[in-house]
Length: 595
Ligand SMILES: Nc1ncnc2c1ncn2[C@@H]1O[C@H](COP(=O)(O)OP(=O)(O)OP(=O)(O)O)[C@@H](O)[C@H]1O
Image 1 (cartoon, rainbow, N blue to C red):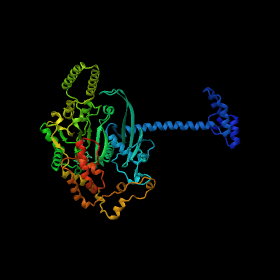
Image 2: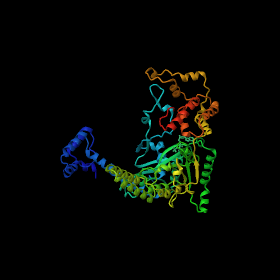
Image 3: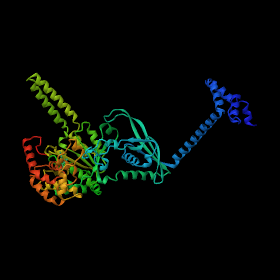
């Protein structure tokens, strides 16, 4: 039977006529209009019936056809989706491999950094923008830095505006291709309940995970991708030293223990001015210790694989510098711990030591000032004597009594704040659960104040003494300071000398910002006021003006830094500076007359 003729009888005349009038064609085969009109009141939309009729006559064709088309599309879409998800489930289950990565693992960071550098990923439609704060150590092109109106001074006011965000895949599913292989990345975030064990707060915390999958049953391509991301991440590490510190307390207890705080260029060993013999001794000792055969040697003799150094000497003599240079030479990360950190507990310290990488340098700075909590007995005795003193004092005046009470309370609370006891520290550095393979460097200004237990052999295997600079070292410091500009040496010809003396006419000088000739030349000139051939002789002259063993390398460096481009001036002004600093030290004043 002809369906059109069957349906025709149901279609209202108005629609039919309108259609015929408008298009001079027959009404399309569709659901009868009065069926729709019957349904509308049933679903509480009776008022739509006239509108429905009006739309039909206005369009010139039956709106039911449109509804039919929409319905067919919707149903087809549903079916396709069902089929797709069924097939996709089959493929994922039987034809894809997966690797799960926890966001607390370093691989997560390697992969995210790598992904942020992939143009294809950046072109993805669902991205998360992150502010990237550049460190002072990251290379910058001079052309990207603006200057002030005078053109003399650098101006960084728009630095933040120029910093581009970094884009990483947003939470959700992403896909990308690498080396002809299809990868699917699922970045998931879920809330987990953390009971706050280990002293933290119980709360729901976000946990993020990555699932990376690829086609076929072998996860080999994913492993290759992860290895590649890791390689890329560490590609410039040979020239850099990564500095890590303990994470903030709340993160430390929930996730990672260590946080990367800097990735600075390696400090060249030759920039650390120290007795050559001492330097070589530390280098040889550390090289021996880090050798792959050493663990077996230690194990065969039942000796724990640990090495400790104590660097002691006055402030500014190069203890920290040598630690960084050693980390640079051996390509190790440096983990810096401050025992003065108020939130650091003994458990945290043990946790930090037990999660160190296989080989690394741990730097415990200023161990003398670390304020280690005294052993319990000593503490009790001191409290007893404090109270005894209080009692005696109480016989004097009431006012004094209150003052002393306040003092004792303060002392008590200070004692509580000092979270790490000596035994806690010793346990962390070489307790049963302590990590093996690390190099521990402790620095101090006053080695005599250290507890014997802390520096006994096995905990401290080598002591290195740092002293005030000898004349020879002052000369070396001078040469190191100025030889870096070797790339641009020149003899001061009269023209350039004159040029440096005269301030250039600049917009600022006409506006009352004129610079002194000296400042002007220092600011503009990128060159030294001597030739590089003269350097050894000038350095010798300088060293003769510096008294032997009286100035720390840091003091000499500070003086030279203020004459960064003027070695000749540094020599000329050295005597005056030396006299002023000696006088300052005698008078114990902090104000320097000559800088
Ligand atoms: N022996 C040295 N050779 C080269 N530079 C040095 C030396 N000693 C100090 N300096 C310079 O002085 C500054 C301070 O040095 P550093 O921090 O290594 O001293 P420190 O002995 O660790 O001091 P502190 O005991 O106060 O921690 C650094 O900029 C460093 O470059």
